[in-house]
Image (cartoon, rainbow, N blue to C red):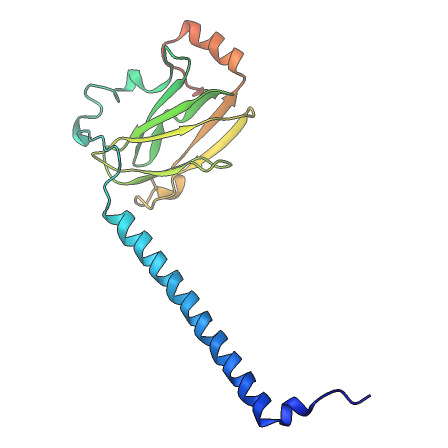
Length: 190
Ligand code: CUA
């Protein structure tokens, strides 16, 4: 029954074990060093690169004219069949409060803020961006299933922050297009 335990007591075996252990310790430290370098490079490099597309807009004149006047907010069908949703987030609500979009369609959300930074997050999707005063946030999406998604503001924006939310309602594409025949801009605000 005696196993070969002589290696444990053999000084040569102990030296080998020691060497192997040191080698693995070195390798694991090197792996961690590589991770740190990669994370630092990605963070610093990406943080210093400008975005491919930056659209600026005057936050004090949002309501007065141009793309984000109230009559132009909501969902619009584009000539190519895609849908653009324009919205504003301001202390402490989104306009429109309920956005409506069709299924199986390229949706482009375009939104901005006239006051402070707000969050633009659609639950159940990977859409999560910020509305920054002075800039237009653009994000594309496609919804497969009809249903409602909550849109809570996820950037602290003041005392009314936790009460700031909207909804995105996804409906069947055919129903959406029927609604769009009679209205230039659509929303599901009752
Ligand atoms: Cu708007 Cu928090």
